[in-house]
Length: 558
Ligand SMILES: Cc1cc2nc3c(=O)[nH]c(=O)nc-3n(C[C@H](O)[C@H](O)[C@H](O)COP(=O)(O)OP(=O)(O)OC[C@H]3O[C@@H](n4cnc5c(N)ncnc54)[C@H](O)[C@@H]3O)c2cc1C
Ligand SMILES: NC(=O)c1ccc[n+]([C@@H]2O[C@H](COP(=O)([O-])OP(=O)(O)OC[C@H]3O[C@@H](n4cnc5c(N)ncnc54)[C@H](OP(=O)(O)O)[C@@H]3O)[C@@H](O)[C@H]2O)c1
Ligand SMILES: *[C@@H]1O[C@H](CO)[C@@H](O)[C@H](O)[C@H]1NC(C)=O
Ligand SMILES: *[C@@H]1O[C@H](CO)[C@@H](O)[C@H](O)[C@H]1NC(C)=O
Ligand SMILES: *[C@@H]1O[C@H](CO)[C@@H](O)[C@H](O)[C@H]1NC(C)=O
Ligand SMILES: *[C@@H]1O[C@H](CO)[C@@H](O)[C@H](O)[C@H]1NC(C)=O
Ligand SMILES: *[C@@H]1O[C@H](CO)[C@@H](O)[C@H](O)[C@H]1NC(C)=O
Ligand SMILES: *[C@@H]1O[C@H](CO)[C@@H](O)[C@H](O)[C@H]1NC(C)=O
Ligand SMILES: *[C@@H]1O[C@H](CO)[C@@H](O)[C@H](O)[C@H]1NC(C)=O
Ligand SMILES: *[C@@H]1O[C@H](CO)[C@@H](O)[C@H](O)[C@H]1NC(C)=O
Ligand SMILES: *[C@@H]1O[C@H](CO)[C@@H](O)[C@H](O)[C@H]1NC(C)=O
Image 1 (spheres, rainbow, N blue to C red):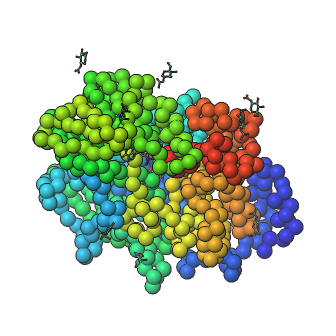
Image 2 (tube, rainbow, N blue to C red):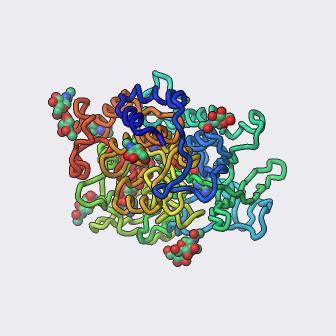
Image 3 (cartoon, protein in one colour):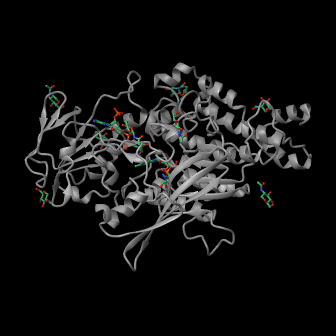
């Protein structure tokens, strides 16, 4: 144990001294306790092999940190390259199902593994193009998309943006940034075998189909499918296999499947095309504005995709109509992102109520201009060229149904560890800056230089609403929680060893405050009072008028 006095003294040091104490820890030969006690969780077996599922900003940071901490890491992503949501391509996803597919639908896995299959064009009625796209799912971004978060919170460590980078970033800039981070850590899709002598960490175009706990060995079995396009034979080679791990990190992102609203008549309208192009489609496949010249467009929804697509097409479109329903959040009004979106719709947007039903159409290949769209207030709208469903996403993790409710992670300790089995963890970088600290917690807890309380204690804390994990920011005084997270990590390092981490730089927070003040909260905080978050009464966080992070992180809306 650390001598009590030394411990107390160090905790009272100002931060810069505390950071210096990090190097001093080794010098002082602080004994590291490795035994687990009744008050702490300990894994059944040492954790050395770890799978990270997803190579977006969250998974890349987790994989890089675990590699640095000498774990044997495997990083799987269904996409052919790193970047996650930010791997923009002009390819559009396969058409979304009408109505939504149940999120519990599980993938086909051959009986005997490993297995290989060569898919041919049109096999099972599916084109090779669609099979490829269904596997990796092109991202729901458009060419001209810019961030709704400033660069200081949309940034990965080690590869800083250049000083002249604007606060608001184009998706192309972020894509390069995330790829640079992957390359810096030797995690890019072309880093093996040329640069690496050890077995590959990454496996791209590899989708996790199933995740099971093997109780007898206390390991996780991951079943994956990797697709490869064979240019010579024009076939797609599919390989299924399994690998076993001591720990697993789920970093599959928040926006897995597009959500199609369940509106009467929508399934029939979804079949309608005009000149080979669907007349109704989800915002996930929106890419460029030019072809909207002179068109009348109905956008369903009034959140970020809706307002930003409306702005993008506004210079071209003849008329933009937005169908908006009252926010289901109840009292307290709209979440901030939607308030902001309302302010950002182009002038001239016609707002109409929710759609009640789409009236039947005589033909399926002449577009929807003659069709009638019935609104809930009885008005009928017609003359629409195209309908864009900016109706959001469903969270789904079909490979591990029990981890989630509706695909949303539940039962997470505030570190991101899954309470029923802390050898499983979840990270989702909202905002990006937290991913660094989460990754640190995964590596430290699993190597034993940070300790979790017992599962019973974690469960009690969870049930009491203490530190609910919502990307670390979601409820309560989030700024305070963030600082506690960093303090906890460093406190654990003092006791159990390991490097200290620096908190988020104050100057970044100032930039963030300026940004959120102008973009989100419009005057509800300023530089003289932004450090006062912790002092705000709980009611201020709920009233919808107080500090930035209560708004920003509320409802996972960005
Ligand atoms: C249109 C749009 C705009 C956005 N704009 C912003 C913004 O301006 N600012 C901001 O901060 N955030 C924005 N976001 C949120 C975005 O999700 C985050 O910025 C960030 O990408 C989340 O990182 P992540 O690593 O958690 O998940 P993701 O970036 O989504 O990465 C998850 C990865 O997991 C992989 N994966 C999923 N399932 C499997 C599987 N079964 N097997 C293998 N791999 C799998 C996916 O292929 C993907 O690469 C936006 C999201 C959307 C949809
Ligand atoms: N950087 C950018 O510019 C940018 C651009 C796009 C998206 N994003 C991010 O991507 C994420 C997803 O955003 P999103 O806008 O696609 O999804 P979203 O925020 O989930 O919004 C979907 C909207 O559709 C509404 N809706 C659903 N069914 C409807 C119906 N039948 N009629 C009318 N409205 C309906 C929902 O209303 P309810 O609230 O009532 O359910 C909700 O407002 C967010 O995190 C966002 O910040 C960022
Ligand atoms: C990883 O292993 C190397 C080589 O043994 C060692 O120098 C380094 O300190 C280890 N890193 C951590 C974080 O334990
Ligand atoms: C999925 O859920 C639906 C109900 O929502 C149920 O009818 C169906 O049997 C479930 N399928 C599987 C594979 O569990
Ligand atoms: C759009 O309308 C304008 C004005 O009516 C017309 O000059 C132009 O040719 C139209 N463009 C297209 C692409 O239809
Ligand atoms: C709409 O018009 C007002 C007043 O001219 C202007 O202040 C505002 O910026 C405009 N909004 C957009 C989105 O163009
Ligand atoms: C229904 O909504 C439309 C669009 O906002 C409006 O023009 C119309 O007057 C409304 N009808 C009724 C009966 O309120
Ligand atoms: C999921 O939960 C159900 C009911 O709680 C249980 O029967 C089933 O074995 C669980 N499945 C897995 C994969 O843990
Ligand atoms: C530091 O860790 C010790 C031992 O687990 C604990 O008693 C103390 O409350 C922790 N302090 C902080 C600030 O987390
Ligand atoms: C912070 O200052 C602004 C601007 O003076 C003020 O409107 C706001 O109410 C203050 N916020 C808090 C939480 O005190
Ligand atoms: C910021 O808020 C404080 C407290 O509400 C106020 O006294 C001060 O004038 C504000 N400063 C600016 C620059 O708005």
